[in-house]
Every structure is written in C-alpha cells, then in structure tokens.
Image (tube, rainbow, N blue to C red; front, top):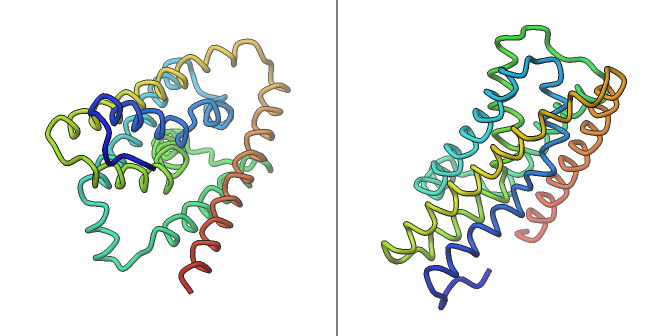
Length: 206
C-alpha cells in the first residue's frame, strides 16, 4: 500500500477505495438478507443502519487505539483474524442448518453486532488497513480525509444493505431458504479463508 508521497485527495480516495473493496458491501448483502429475512421492513432498516454503525465504531476504535489494544493484550493480527474466522464459521453453520435462535429481541441486537458489524464488515483486513492509513496520516488534512473516507464507506454499506431489503419482496419462502443456504456457504468460505490467512501469517513469523 503506497501512501507515502501522495496528495491529500489521492490519500483520501485511496483509503476509501481500499476499505470499500476490503469490506465488500455486495458480498455482505446475501448474508444480511439471510439473517433478517424473518424481520419486518422497519426492523430490517434499523438493523442495516445498526450494522454499519457498529462497524464504524469498531473501525474508529482500532484507528485510535488499535496498536495499544493489541500490544497491551499481547494479541497478534493473525490471532484476531483466526478468532474472527472461527466466529464466522459458527454463524455460517447456523445458516446452513437453519438452526437459529428464537429470541427475537436479543437476536436483533446480536445480528447488528455479530456477525454483520464485526467481523464481517469490520474484520481484521479492514482494521489493519485502517491502522496502516492512520500511520500515514501525518497532517490534519490527511486525518480529515481519512475520517471522510471511513464515514463515506460506511454510508455506502448502509445504503447497500437498505436497498437490498427490497429484494426480499421478490422471493418467497423457498427463495429465502435458498438465500440463507447460499449465504451460509459464502460465510463458511470467508471464515475458512480468514483462518487459512491467519495460519499463513503465524507460519511466516516462525
């Protein structure tokens, strides 16, 4: 990631594009739809904003205190990535088997936090990328540009999730079940990839 000798505008655009690609709003859509398919339209909209908000809070927290938190806890990025992968794997198994909690209120809160807000959106890749950009934000202009980029990415995420809820009107119960199974498979693949990358990272440090 070459962010050394570039203008503030280029730095901001580079941060926006990098985070948008890593966080992948289109990739989160089928998983979001599978998790909120049995909710009302109002609850879906609320969960879309909450998921984006949780992701923004996590990214902002690690932007300011990420290095301190990881150093204090003696936790590596690879360990964080492996933990995120295992968490996503558990959620994917629920989607694949159709076994989900029936406690609606608690489940609503949990969906926005896990797996949508983190680690799906605000995952290790996005966290590390943000921390790298923070290290290169040497001026007030760059700091402002990075803040704008992070907020803009999360607005795009929220809009993508909000827009996707209209797709549920086009599919019936069988279609929703199919979406859930596909989402579970995609989430399992993402989880396995995160774990593999973590193992590679551990191996490289040995």
